[in-house]
Amino acid sequence: SAFGKLASVLPAPVAAHVHAVVASMADNQLDRHYARVFDAVATAWAASQKVRISYPRKDSEGRTVMTSRLVSPRYLEPNAWGHGCYLIGDDELTHDRRTFKLERIKDVELTVERFEPSILPDAPAYLTRAWMVSGEEPATVHVRFSDAAAARRALETRWHPSQREQVLPDGS
Image (cartoon, rainbow, N blue to C red; front, side, top):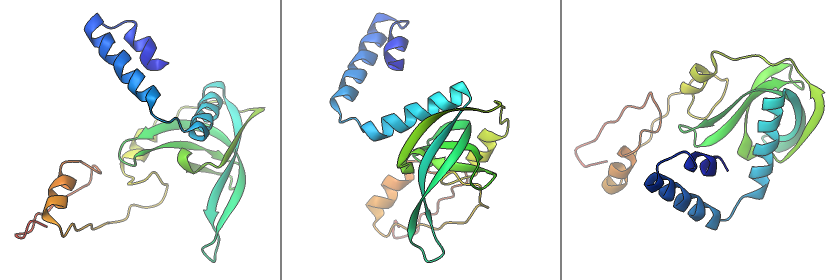
């Protein structure tokens, strides 16, 4: 719907292109679960309402356990570096500000509980240092493509702002 609204104020040739893109997107299969999660979280953020989510975590033995969390959304960020969308919010389970990847939320419920909105002026900076959004300290990651063609394709994309590349004599 946002693209449709945008197209209504664009010059006719650009609007036609936007409408064509929207039509092709409509042909793709919609992930209804993700759309429901995104809608509920975005609504909660905009309306200063808490949202209850079911979110996986690893226990001490490495098993995945579902947790129920009541979260006050503070920031919703589509993150190109992490190729996902993230919710930064105050988590009542841990009494801490946490980051949740929307794609991992298994269930969502918009509550009637309200919270006092606040701006996170440091949120964009918080996101730029992360490979995937996390409050943890940065980690150094080394990736090697042994196939020269795959290495060339990988170099076409900037995966992270801290990225450094080294092409070896064999093209890897």
